[in-house]
Amino acid sequence: MQTKSGYNTYSKKATLSIDAIVEQYGYLVKKIAYHLLARLPDSVDIDDLTQAGMMGLIEAYKRFESSKGASFETYAGIRIRGSIMDEVRKSDWAPRSVRRNGRAVTNAIKELEAKLGRDVSDMEVAAHMGIGMDEYHEMLHSSMSTQLFSYEEMLDSDANNFDGAETDSENAPYSLVEENGFQGQLASEIENLPEREKLVLSLYYNDELNLKEIGAVLGVSESRVSQIHSQAAMRLRSRLSDWRD
Image 1 (cartoon, rainbow, N blue to C red):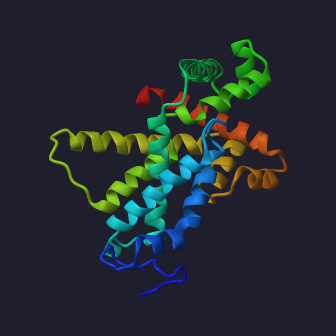
Image 2: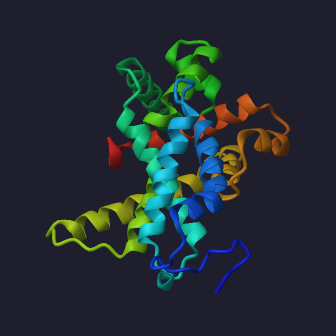
């Protein structure tokens, strides 16, 4: 059966050509690529992200089964996102100084929140580190794509579930319990974020608004939205450090 988008319920056995799939869903690749680009350093090229996303789209077409219950567009979005994030990880763009700065911010947030027993502001963290706000926000931005956990990784996990992949590893059940535990803790910590940070994450990931659109909703600049998003990510990293560090 054909849906509004035309191909949402075809099976992977369908005879549509790769060119037809790219033409039909190329917009989805570009949308996701530009959405993720806002979180990445200026050195990352949109064409590289788009190319990786196209590979994810083609892989989604080859593996999709309509009997699994999800629409192709939903499944393809997960595959595209995962393929782009894999490409970012493989490129390993971040110098040691960026990773070191990211850990310094994470540790500062963790120390202050433990000491004060409440959410701390970006101004408080910067003061604790002995740096100015401009330097602090630059550290946040440059560290964003070095995070080892994200909504994208959770979606990658969902993609594996769609495939119904199984493993014979005797450690698999324990790994699954650990991952489920982490995701549950992540969801809990997101709920405990300051309201503005939680709203930015919701608008960015759930509603898929870009930073400019979120800025219009909140009445702040695009750069301020980026700062709020980065601060939320670092706060989550500090609170989940026992899981991932």
